[in-house]
Length: 246
Image (cartoon, rainbow, N blue to C red; front, side, top):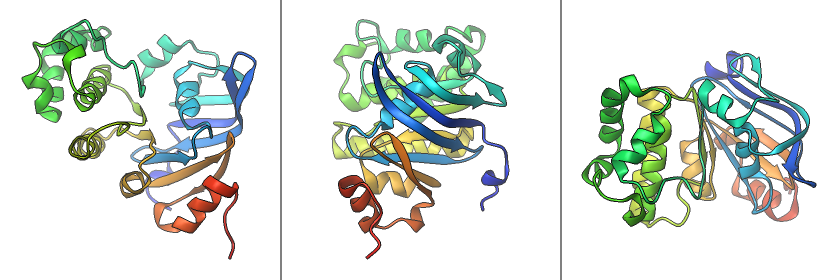
């Protein structure tokens, strides 16, 4: 057991059932994110990975179970209250304001903490020098990778206590994938922010994670350290719905 795992979880989903409207996606899901760790959620398409993040951020209908954050029950909190309390959510799509400049996007990210904006934005620029170079251009003209960096940057300006990242490498060129993952590692290392990461790039996700949770058809099927799961296990979970035993 690592030092982080000896502490109470900063974020916990307990037997959570949730979905959209009349559609249930998650069934009795249990997830714990401890201080100082990166937890990666893996699973096949449609397994409910992104729904875990959206449910944590307050963007789904919770039908059962409970969510606690920093010792408080936030199950019935609205999304804006969760964001203000320190839950930083970076969605896969529609994550920046396309008609605003990069600089104005960052001002929007800091709307709850405007007094420290000048100092905080320099920290974001230090993480993402490319964003600083593009600060006067419209976000809609950025590449996919640059938009991903900007979306992470504006979320960091809220000073989150945890960071929820949904498919940060999706549709990016290989060089941009490297840059984004290097930035995530640096955020975790230098800012000490626990990260809940949903990612389809299994190898990169496993290399970054302290723990791995695998979802199968809306249920958590496995929770372990990256070193304790094999390619055969993942294949069995993704394709067959169970861990191979032979």
